[in-house]
Image 1 (cartoon, rainbow, N blue to C red):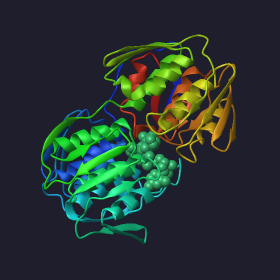
Image 2 (cartoon, rainbow, N blue to C red; image 1 turned 90 degrees about the vertical axis):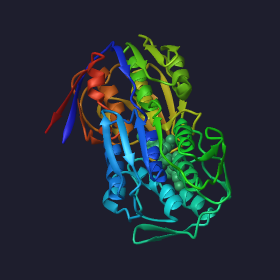
Image 3 (cartoon, helix red, strand yellow; image 1 turned 135 degrees about the horizontal axis):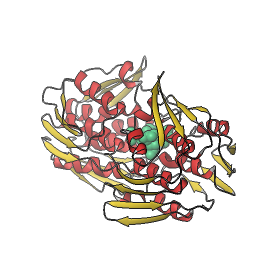
Image 4 (cartoon, rainbow, N blue to C red; image 1 turned 180 degrees about the horizontal axis):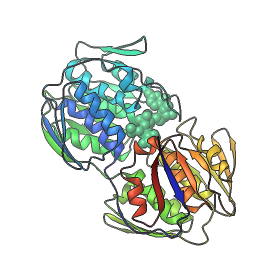
Length: 418
Ligand code: EPZ
């Protein structure tokens, strides 16, 4: 099992290029099933989650080949409809995103229920509600979802919650349905806009992505396309917090600043300097950061995937900071790990009250999920003494070359295999 050894590294400095977004690449890889032809994708991050999606697509019969480090060629002309078992879906919840494309292309799908994960039960009731509205019979038997239809028909669908995955799955299912689908209270994340742009390049007719109402007009067929994945706003935010909390000066390349407005606003509130310059952002820290509060919300609100990273920073800011997590029911597991490092945090339901402490002390901690793992690295960068971060396979799921990128900024971080 790999671990990260992290030692105090103040004043991080230098440049880092942000990788393509994992949460855009995953639905777009699933959508390649709809092409029934070759697609070329650029800026695909080399991550464990992408490898799992590769296993799923090759199991279905796709040709999947990285022709350059981050340039991927997929040919789904020989894809057949097969059951996807628990050994694949249990590794990654996003495996459910192949349901929409399989239903659109073949009219039915059978995949194992992915199960929950450490941040919550992660139900897919809204995905199934959307499929049923499109005329799909969905039943759960022996841990599998069995979905059958005689052909999907467009429908008006209201999402009780703007679920990212449900929005993506329903859009993909509706692309080849008969007639028009109107999806209301849809999620507005930038990754949904990227998926919609890719689908339209393949010949789909999707309008309104990025707004609460998305209209999908069914078409006869989709075909080949090429597309560049948008930058990863959460990876970018993670390095921006690293600059702020180490009182550093970091320039990020390959970024779309409109995707991370809440992160920029909060860092400025906390005293950091943020200079936006096209596809570059420069973040400088301050020696006297100010406590602030965050409340996670669906986009364009503050992203839940940045909550743990900001809590890492709040631990060392004089005063009281309040974190309210409204998206996932169990996304405070990192608090126990921060407490091992000397943090002073009290949890009351979905609210965490963080009292700043003079300093954190390095200790052995465990990554409880992908973003918590990144947050523990950040805490290790400011702690006195060595921090050993365990279970870093979580981090490798969503951050490409994270230790190389941090080392290039002057961080004292080392991966060890034990
Ligand atoms: C996506 O997960 C992201 N993953 C998550 O990123 C992200 O945290 C989340 O959106 C919220 O922004 C990918 O895009 C691969 P949701 P998703 O459906 O689609 C409830 C990371 O770190 N819900 O918007 O699963 C659900 O329980 C990961 O990269 C239902 O109740 O998120 C949760 O409380 C972590 N029924 C809330 O909605 C459903 O049918 C948000 O879930 C679906 C969701």
